[in-house]
Image (cartoon, rainbow, N blue to C red; front, side, top):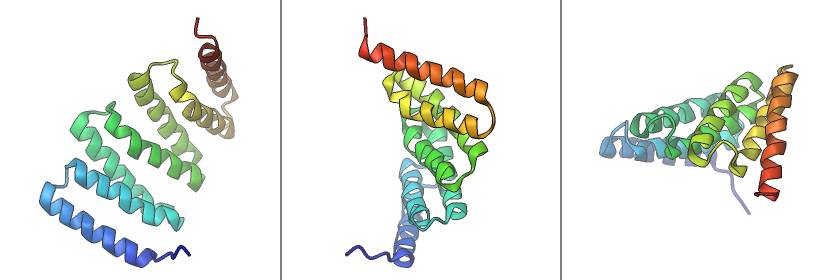
Length: 153
């Protein structure tokens, strides 16, 4: 049976993050990863306000290390978007998804099937924000990507 010992996990991962920070530095990829891992403890408890700072820090560190469009930014940025979706922060979700799409496009191309799930989330967020025209444009792009994936010629 899965035991949810969040206090123990929080203490353990916080101590690990402190040790990693002392060993590798606050701007290291190891510290960024420790922040992303630590965020999961709070995310699982639905303590979204406590989750956000860890993910923002991880994104910022990875951007500083590799640049804002680096593949390294994808994982913490995707986790941040997932947080905003779970938290119901639609405006932040839309901005996050838009940013994630930009990074994904640079990595995989503007018409890659790798974009589909994020584009779908972006369209839904835009609809919830009352921006139906923008959502329709994205849904059109989703259709075009799906069509080209099925008929690559």
